[in-house]
Amino acid sequence: MIGEEESLKASKSCSTGQSSSRSGLLTMDQKHSSSDIFISISGLIGAGKSTLATKLAEKMGLPCFYEPVMDNEYLADFYKDPARYSFPLQIYLLNRRFQQHQSIIWQGQGGVQDRTIYEDSVFARVLMESNLMEEREYRTYLSLFSNMSNFMKKPNLIVHLDVSPEESLRRIKNRSRDCESSITLEYLQNLHKAYEVFIADIARIIPVIRVNYERFRTTEEMADMIVR
Image 1: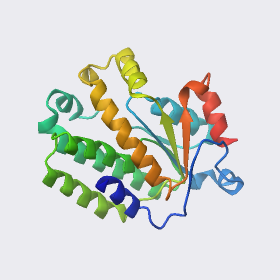
Image 2: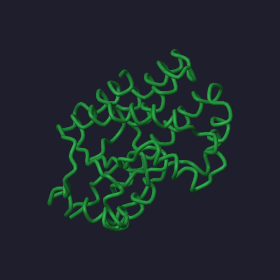
Image 3: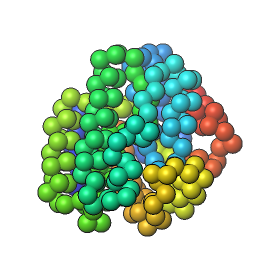
């Protein structure tokens, strides 16, 4: 997939990692210098990224960088008219996540990021393949991402939350955000398929832990599994 290939190119200088479900992927050296730790949480809409990011940041004493949702001036319009607003939304999100990366670099305190900038390409690709984004817009998006990638800090670890499209939709309905009311199961299924390819590819470059949320009683248990 073109988007995932661009993400991989942006991460080439990082040491090889393997997708894993085992705990404790943070090394002892990393744990003792948590100011250098940068962890990204990935997953479908409604997977529980923000909740885990908060708990993980608390446990490790790191700042948390949340996905721009409540203050996103394009999100509601996008769900009403995806074809019109898909490109400006993706550019807006790319810019905001790039700003977060710059903050992590310049503040020098590490951080936990609620959704990684690399997985934005998953959404852009699905939108293009669904004819909701023009191919020229998609190429422009990838070119901009490639240029930005020269100034980005790669995560030490990506924690991917495995949630089925059906469970994702159930959680979306339960949290009842007006802007998400038009999300369909088909859209989530397409995202899920694209995520499988993305995670398999990015795990060759950045260490990945895949976590099934349903295996844990609490978010705290999950955070403990990651840092112990």
